[in-house]
Image (cartoon, rainbow, N blue to C red; front, side):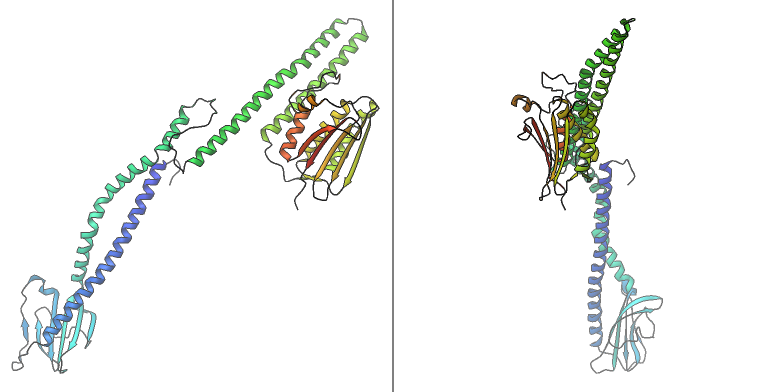
Length: 448
């Protein structure tokens, strides 16, 4: 089938070809069976005719050969010969004096006088009489073809009618598909609600279900994009306004170098905050848009934790904070992309350092259990959080009131999303070890 042909035409052609092949197979089978039956019937007639000739009295006093006259136009299709003691004494008018067959008893198919004959030979009771009875094979073929025409010609004439009926049946069977196409064609471009088609056949139910699933995924993606755009516009407004205000202060400072430098420093800090916010927004958008299943990549969480701790150590030292790393237990490998795990670690440790006071202690602990579970813990000696604030962790742009540290409030959203995608469990509680906050992330580990 060529590309672009209608499904209705394909079904009609396939059904018509199948019907024609079945019809031809029936025709062949009918011909073989009818020819077999005709042969048996006509052979029995030859035997009966030979039996009559065997018991027929012969005029042996006359040496002349008795030629039986043709009584009907079909007489030329049958023939017989009677020999007595090797001499021909009787024959039909359409054969010569030579025996029809070399056989003495039984059936034989021979070519005689340019025609193909079916011959039955038999001997008399005393053995001095030899009888041959033959029939042209073409006459049997004519009978077989006549039977075949009578049976199959009406079927051949009915094929166009069957094709028309098949066309109508296929069209009616495809009405739900046409209805689905019409329903989709009438939908608005922004309509993402489930498609409802009445009386959907069971064969189309998976198609409609998958289509509705696709629409649901598209709706979630569109909502995510809209939410991202709204969040970006909302959150970028504040740092951009602050940058603009500080730029105006720098312009109005005149000869006051100290005021101008302070305004420029504040402007740079605002630019850094805006850049950090954009990075967080883009990371969260990528996670929500494309992350659906954990990667098959295996990463050593301890090595990643060492790298993140080394990167954030200068910021901790600048505030007199003590950042420690502990690695315990068995192997700590997680089935997830290294970039995601690094982002999760950086957000957790950065939050612990950022919201803990100067001189605080932050402990990063990575442990592997004999059962294959991998556990990440981040302890801090900060002020902790109220239970009401703990319940809101992970909400976009949520920040605890009273903190002077800059931030976007997106770090926890990123942590929650990475944990969901990689199959980890996240719990937040008070740290019995350092007295501040404890964040625990547990992965099931690699299956071996």
